[in-house]
Image 1 (cartoon, one colour):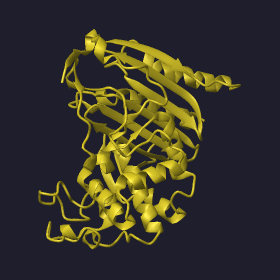
Image 2 (image 1 turned 90 degrees about the vertical axis):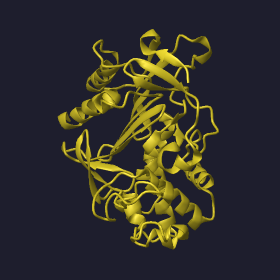
Image 3 (image 1 turned 180 degrees about the vertical axis):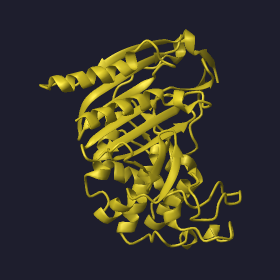
Image 4 (image 1 turned 90 degrees about the horizontal axis):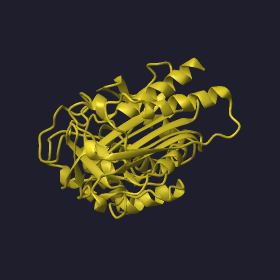
Length: 346
């Protein structure tokens, strides 16, 4: 990996806005959103794409171009079609694949996972259900480690649990995970979304310490795709929110279960509910279904507000120094706060 000092990097910003005949209030909102990214006093730079959409219509977008001094690593300007690894946003996609199998009668949410993955029969000496994998109540830390908690006892975030769900849907459907996901993305008109590392996604970096970046060369292993490895674009994620929440991708009954609070997790936003691959919040009188993600080289946030049919998406190609998650997700949280304030003021 090659080191690049973040202070020696040139960060050029461009603003892309869709402003047809809109009200003064709407134009003021855009100005407020833009100021989040252009204010002089920021804890770090922004390196990626931010989008707000009303339904399928993108009403605000902001893109940055990150250009290291080293000429052979200069990356092209970001666009709404730039592919990023979306990290844990992958979980809601895997959850949707599970619920599609439920709708077809191939998966019982309350069946033990060993009914489908027999090789796990001797693993933990406890009954773990499919539902508990979906809502992080399984207690699973890793395949080769003891359970962190008894199944159903407490929320314990588990990437391994979602990777097992990827195996499970492959078993019940008779298709490998990549093919199954590709079929779903085609149905959702997500032409630039892949369950595979074989794509030319954004050059990415990791911040080892504050101000010190290293380039990331290796892709996330394919076995982690169901929990953290889907590759998508800001534009496609707008389509995803519409497909998941406003179409017949899953049945009404299945969708209700996905957005039903089954557990509580502690988060920098406060206590959040957790459904199936989705965080649930209404603490500020605005219903929100969300998730964020952090993997080596990428961070992401997707929030959907069903009452106004609004989506907020941020994708970055730097996994910022992880000791301070408030700094890591600074722009994501600032844009979210401004959007929530707008909703409440309305």
